[in-house]
Image 1 (tube, rainbow, N blue to C red):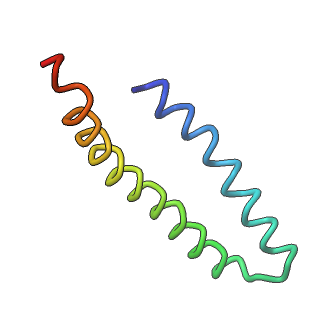
Image 2 (image 1 turned 45 degrees about the vertical axis):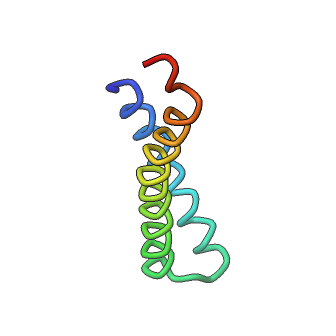
Length: 68
């Protein structure tokens, strides 16, 4: 988990800066872009945290029940 967290931090930080720079080049204010970017990242984490266990439970109930 340490490796996953560290690598996610190393990937997320430059991606955030590049996204904000790209928005600034297109004339979008940094405050608006920062809020929208934060919302998108949080939405992605939310959907992953919601869908992962849900789909894992469905798959294990229907396809792996003979193992348990």
